[in-house]
Length: 356
Image 1 (cartoon, rainbow, N blue to C red):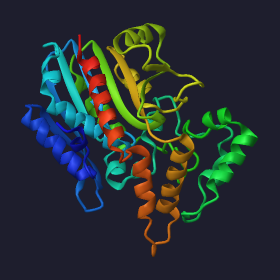
Image 2: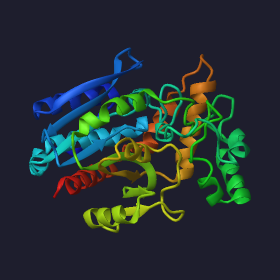
Image 3: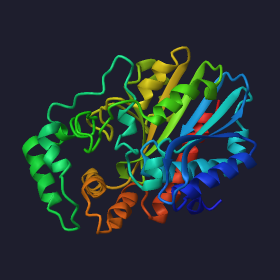
Image 4: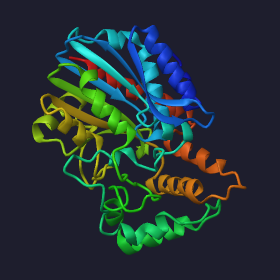
C-alpha cells in the first residue's frame, strides 16, 4: 500500500474506509453514535473493530482521534495496519485486537481538536471522586491572550504577545498552566467539560466487553502535534516503575518518555489513561500516548487559538476556512515525507505492541 493513500481527505471517507477494510478482514465491527452530525448532515459515530481470541490472555487496543483533527494520522495508521494483514495475523492466538476509530468523531468531522461541547476529551476523563471544576492557578492570567472574545485575524500580533508572555512568565510556567486542563472557561482552550462526555459514556459502557476477559491490556492511543517534526515519543505519564521497565523493554528506551518537564509531554488532568486503569483494575492496563511531532508548540497554539475564536466569535458573514485549513496542517502536515514516515513509524509501533 502507498502510505500516502492511507490518509483520507475527511472524516466521512476515513470512517467508510475503516469500516469496509475491517469487515473485509473479518473483524466484528460496531458503530456507536454520539448523537451529532457532520457538516454534511451525516451521523457521527465511534467505530470499533474487534478480532482475535474470544477468551484472550492479552488484548491490544489501538485508538485514534481522541483529539478530533489529530485523527487524520491515527486513522491512516489503522487503515495501513489493516492492509498489512501479516502483522495482525502474526499475533499470538490468545491475543485480541481492538481498533477504535475516531474517539472524537465531531472534532474529526468538523476539523476541531475539541468535541461538540468544546471539550478537550483528554481532560474529560475525571475519576468518580473528582469534580468538573477548577483551573491551574495562573490560567486566568492568560485567558485574555488565549481566548480573545473577537473574530480571528489573519494578521495578528500573536507572536509578539506570546514572546512577551514567555519572557515575563517563563516557558515552564506556561507549559504547566495552559495545557493541563481547565474547567472554568467553557469557550476557552483545553476546557475539560462540566460533565462526562458522550465518548466517556460509550467507553464506560463498552470497554470491558471490547477487551474481553483478559489479564493484560496494551493500549496505543495515536496523537499528533507535540515534538520535533517527523519524530515520535511514546508518553508514559505517571506509569509506575514496573510498568515503565516492561514498556521500555518492548518499545526501546529511545522512544519512551516519562512525565517530565524536559520532554514533549506535560502533566494533564482528566486523562484517558488513568481513567481506563481505574475502570478496569482487575487487569494490567498499560496505555501509551503515541505523540508524533509536527510544528513548534507556539505555532500549534496559534492555530488552535484562531480556530477557537472563529468557532465562538466569528462573524457569520465571513468565511473562516483558513482557520480550519491551518489547524489541519498543524496536526496532519501535507508533507509527503512526514506522512509516509509517520505511517511507517505507526505501523512499527503496532507491530511491537502485537508481538509476543
